[in-house]
Image (tube, rainbow, N blue to C red; front, side, top):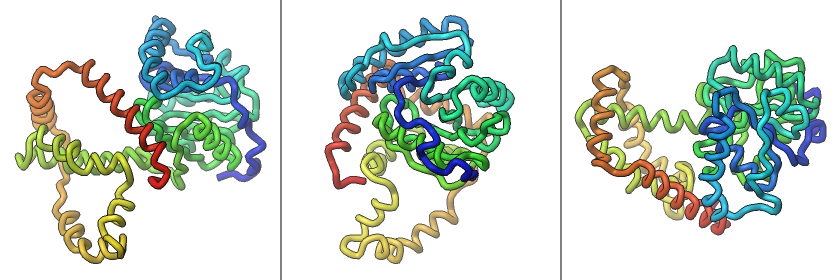
Length: 323
């Protein structure tokens, strides 16, 4: 990482206006979150009808954001939609990009953003697969490019993964961490670039074994989802795997758990599957999910998920002893 601008003061931390580039599912969620925190948002997306779709999505998100609690000055009326990235970034204090996961498109977009934004403005990408090192090569000022990868939906789930590339300034990472923290998020700083970053890799490890168990007939899709949603998933919503193992060890903590259950862990690791997403496995998973849904209404599920997420996040904030 480049330390030429190591001090945090080299980049703006007093943020009043955010540019959101790309307003699909993730971008629209970022727009809603920023508006709810009292910020002005200028957004752009080249898709036909993008502005109308964005305003409709913000209106749909707003009641849930009201339940969470709005900041002073919060209003959907503080959203401006413009024609392109240059206009969006010109007067922004922070830029959040959410375009397609194709490096050539990222390069074109970031070159335009880099040319238009003031030099002390951080340029963040929501990319789930591309690294900041790969993206920042298109910029004359690569030191301000960071990863700010949210978890879907960003307006409800607090996690944001923050990472600098090979040429990113330390000050840009610090400014991004501060911005997300002030936005009400729970940012974590990643220490090196990885395919899929950290949280998605943890998910992928679970998906790998879940799909293996379905593919070998050990469990149905419904069984797998129930095993997580009504078992460890309830605890994982409260604390991470290392802390959970620590609490499982009683007064002797994590050391006891690793000594006591270590051999079993290693035996299970050795027995985990290595599936491939063949057409047959895909068909089995889709058919199993359709059977598990049994005609349930998707919109109703999403609404109930969002309501429970809001309640859970609020209660976690009121539990100061949970990290």
